[in-house]
Image 1 (cartoon, rainbow, N blue to C red):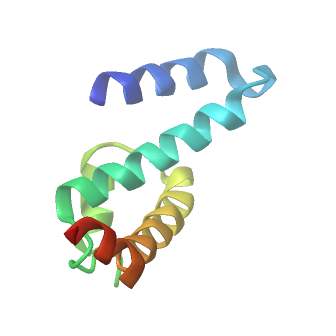
Image 2: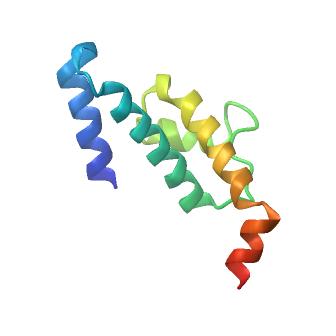
Length: 94
C-alpha cells in the first residue's frame, strides 16, 4: 500500500493540474488513507477529536499532504458509520 500511495503522489507531482485523471488519483489516495486508518485503528477509537489526536498525528507522520486531510477524515467517518450499522454487524457475525 505504501508503494501504491507513493506512486500516486509521484504522479500527482509530475503531471500537475493539467493531468486529466488527477482528481481520480487524488480521490483514490484519500479513500486509500481512510481505509488504512480503519485497518490500523478499527472503528472503535476516536481519531479526530482535536488537532493532536491519533488520526491527525498518523497522517502528519506519514507525510500525507494537508490538502487531503479533510476528505480523508470525511471518508473515514463515513466508512466508520457504515461499519457500525446493525446490518453490517449482523452480516459479519454470520
